[in-house]
Length: 70
Length: 423
Image (tube, rainbow over all chains, first blue to last red):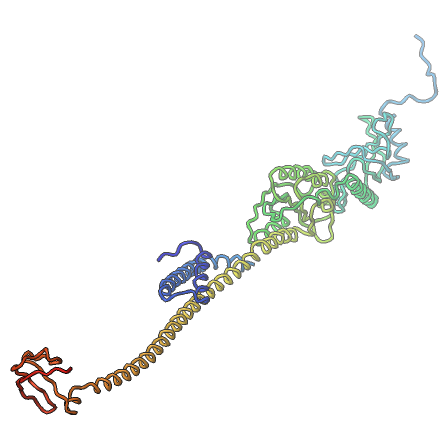
């Protein structure tokens, strides 16, 4: 189940799924599909986050060198 | 031939005799043993081993053909120590200066000239004159709007391209460039070598400023280490002052040492008290810009990135928890609903079962009432024909036909004798 779109689009879709649970709109038939979709979105967001963190980890020392340069 | 009698009694002098007489007369009044002070304005000055000065009355006009001129000279033996003394006080003889010469008359017969041999120069007077001329120059520059002209130029926020007017292999040069090198920033220094003292220096400095002004440098730095007033005199030169003022590039000065303030310093965009200090100040300009525009944003960027990632981390974790709880809650609710329904169904089933049991018992009781055995026990009997069918009517039997009669305790066969219907 692919998750396309940027972070905000994915987060909005996830928020909508959570909201539908909060509002009791999810039938048992839909529950699995929604949970599966929410899981896919969460995993996608986590993967993106990890990728971003890894990139930041690469760049952070370079920025830190600039920041610490006296 | 008659001899010619002289017309007068005075002797006729040969030219040489005339000059000898004249020299004797003059020297008796203004000679080496009777020196005097002569005050005048320098009209021309020329130095070639010895010093030669044409002195005129102060304020007299050069166009005045009758203007008296005194050809003064100072022999090298006396001029050299005088020159050093003047130089140490930052004075060099220039046309227009008012000077007091001490000396004696000097007649030079071969050229028919009366000159003046200088043995002393009134330095104090000259210094006063220099100070006056300096004030006059400042006043002129001020009235022409040149004193602040260079100061009004916008300064590059990052003056990394530095035009340098200096003399390499001097302390001032190495002090200044050392500061730039040690700063760690990538200064690009474009050097124009010049003399920084002596008569040739002002013209070279002016040319260097002009050259650098056309090279798109961020600032032009005029650098000269400490020295006597004479050593630093070039930086009081009007030509240098005007070149600085009219430069379209901000000119920074680091001239001499603490306490020295030249005209160049006054007209410069920024002045530092020494070449070292100037290097420090320029490095500091870049350093401050770097801190405000690079280091500080970098720190903020690091902090903001960390905060954003933490926020995203927290968001995903929170959504994950929320999702897990939402699904669990939903499933539990559904399970509770099913359990509730099951319980209701169970209770209803039990009710139905009890009701059915009751109904069945009632029916069973009702059926018991109709049990044929019960009737047979009461004395009733059941007659069946040969076919086994219950005989309910006379029409179902014939006379002489055998019928089976069932009683409560058994059966017997009987023969129909007659039929007697009920009327």
